Length: 280
Image 1 (tube, one colour):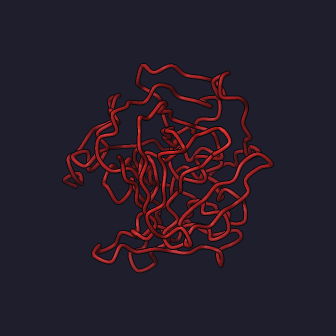
Image 2 (spheres, helix red, strand yellow):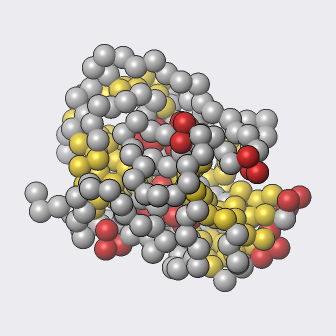
């Protein structure tokens, strides 16, 4: 039995295995909902799923005619997709606790992958969904602007622009994994004066982990999609890189907090790794 929990701890659930599939999805809808470079899902029998607490705190956004995406209204963590007619429960792996007994088997929708993320492992890659899983829906593409990176949430109600992005980190701490419901967060940092919301700032909610000094996530209250968090007092903005619509022109400089990484995720490639924060 595996348990899942959102970042704020309000929503809890359990899933009885075995997990039949683990997949990284790079589609624009998943990237925006999670705010991550990609989402990772596991599938298990629906009969073995049950909510433990917080079901009344779950919000739902209809992202397409076929799909509904759910999230915790308190912290924005992504919730499982339940498909009783198919006998399946599909859960975001980032919110599941401990060893899952399964490893990623493929990358899907690599034709939509984020330009700042390089796939460096040897897993099979599919341009869209694998044929056996059917089609999918994508967000419209946004034209690149000179000197500006644009971004938006899943529903598009919240949008922003950023100039002079400074750096990107892949963070594997447990807070980022739960907050983004993903293998790791990928956060873009820039100066607060180089950032502006272009619409929907009033729809952005924040959740701060009580015991943390700074750690706060932001999300759209309409769709649950990731949103930037502006810290004027520190002069910076933290942007969930999965919400970017165009290329920011910078790439990840490090994996951080790798001592806390998910046991089912293997870090590959030559981006430097740090057990916690880099010395600088």
